[in-house]
Length: 230
Image 1: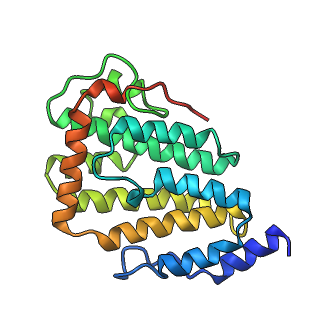
Image 2: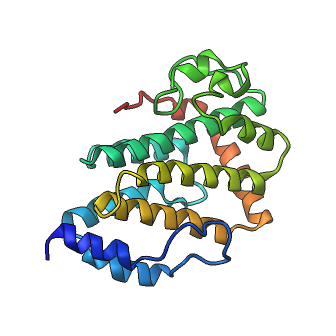
């Protein structure tokens, strides 16, 4: 069986991810998902492992620094040949950069003197620090609502909003990949979002966002990086 045929069979065997945020559990367990992922070619399995290492929320310890997150993203990009998957990594880094900047600004911090974070907006954000959503409302239509929820101290609603945004970005790419490796990778990343939301409770969400805010403020110079843009 060719990889193409194997991946078509794999995708057909997976339950729909459209029930995200509705059911209390993911549409299948991680154990069952991993069993089905054994159909991946070794080189594709390695790429998927890298993607999950950088993009799955559950792959990060609570004390991870933004500097470590950005380094992990750059290391991952250097080993991903598929353009769609590279764009997915960069989009998630755009999201993380914008959220880190919102937290810093909420806590009264001044704009960094140089590039901030990684991605398309690393120079734009410091230059538009005082503007609503950093002047990115059209490029990032989800950002004004994220800003509102952050300022209103609604961590669970903010987490849901970020997860939904990440899911929508993935689904946009999914329309162009139905039965190839990219389709499998997008499904697994969507499953990770679903699983994250299923595990969320208000107290845990509040703790996660308080921790992220503290990390963003600590040694702010550690999260100024020159980003890669594909």
